[in-house]
Image (cartoon, rainbow, N blue to C red; front, top):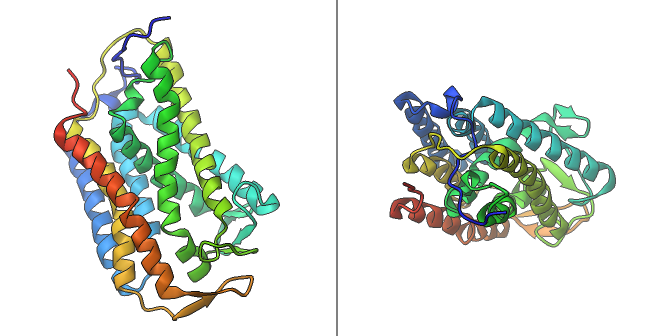
Length: 310
């Protein structure tokens, strides 16, 4: 088994969506990013709670615009099905049993079994931009997943782990606001992170890793079976779009803190009283030192030309 680098890109060259590099698609991607930026800056200042949800749906839109170029419709649909089904299974299991997130229930409707239908789409939208951000940090690792190579074997596991961590950073910076403050879901036994148990974040990394890992293996199997050949990829500048959209989750926490108008305290299900201003301020700081530097690191790699290959 050879450990030499194999530059093959996995998606078949005959896929028309994968080859398309039309200006229209690129412009649509920037429109989506601009919409996310406007949402992150304006919506929280109005006191509305929907900024993160709107940005996650814009992540779905970016996946449809950009993901079809990168992977083709078939592979992107596989990503959607894997992320939606796997996350729904784990979410429903946790509502019923407490594993892997903890004991909670949703107040949002409509629901598929015990979980709102929207949640699966949010996993897909946030998942796509998290995956692409991690992919940028690892120098387009999704193109180097051939299991016959050392790099491919490492990337097949490193990329899902990093993507899961990047996606979990989003939840660390939003969950207490969505649950303890907004009551979109309720932690029945509370927790030390402003009413959220630490198991929620361990569960998030595990669940997001699990569906990213399945998707990575789908790509890896295809690459391993293919003969070496170069397909058309995204230009490096296009990798900037999902990174900037991911960055907007961090920006929205800053404007949410600046636009804070809620009551001074909030009480969780266990009767614990929390300072609402402290929740918004703490989660802003968390995002400033997680989402923001990760995004800036990815942007720096793009600016330096690290994603270019001959």
